[in-house]
Image (cartoon, rainbow, N blue to C red; front, side, top):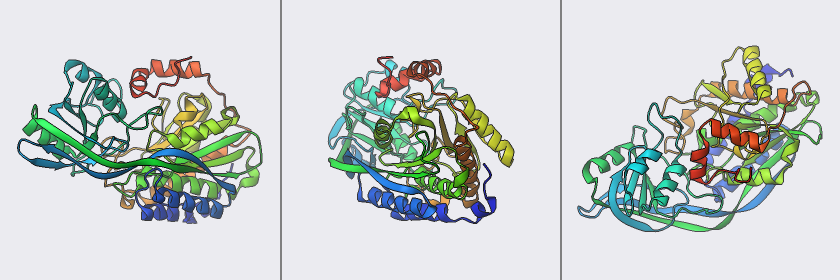
Length: 439
């Protein structure tokens, strides 16, 4: 479809919404801030011209941090720590063991029973696969650790947060605290083998979260989903993760309403809540939809933190061809990968075999860039990058809504085989995220 590029370059609707979200600040799942952000997103989608804007509410286990620290009792020294969301509100003491990156072999080589385990975020160069924070925590629990310390790999005294728990067990079993790279290295140098206390206080109570839905285009049974998540960790202001994605959904909707008559398939925008607690919002949303009628999903998470635009098309050839065509048409590079990514709101759909494109951007900073840290603020986003990537995304979503592009779902057994072949199954099983026990 043909987009009105002049209008898109002149539009400030998406960027204004990004500013509004970051002005709200951290938006923990179930919090009043997340609710205000969902309300503001619904208003922005209506302004963009979407119809049938509505909320979908569901129950969650709410979690709000209190006082958290890491202490070496023998010398009375305390290190500032940030509790990992959904850590239990408790404390534990045990000899410190530094397991470097906390790879499976690191746990196999050391006895961590009754110990305070510290692991670094990410994986070393040359690792055969990515090992997620949740997998490291679950291995610590299963091997009898008393407490868990998650060390950032970012310079600048920036602890890196992230949630724990699983769908069946929303809270973790042992207290978990994040520390900065500098604090973690100091702990390892001074207190390896000494007793370290991890203390977490948190308010944990039932609450609700919401997804925001809206539609444009013809009222067809089939639909193309364009999605993001509106919640954010409370350390920064949630600009990159994921204010950019939600603002991008608003801008894509705004772009496509100008050419709505050219759409052959309904475009269904969904802005999920509660992504940061193991994708609770999108998992709930996927269960409410007839995913057999979803032609494709394009999920936006962490776009515009750099000019290095990336699209993961999960082995779906039609999506890869479309993204490559858009990149060629607009003479803008998009790095495309077929590898499966389980760690954002597209996962509840791709695991069911729905054709999936995950749009994000690379960062010079380690791992997820500034996301999950105090550094996730509006100044990390370049307005030019946001504008250009929103235009490319509008072209991808509009292309998927055309009858000229056809997609084919995969079976769950095929998706399971793909994850096995990619070497990701062991990690997903360790995290409690493997969905294919009956396949």
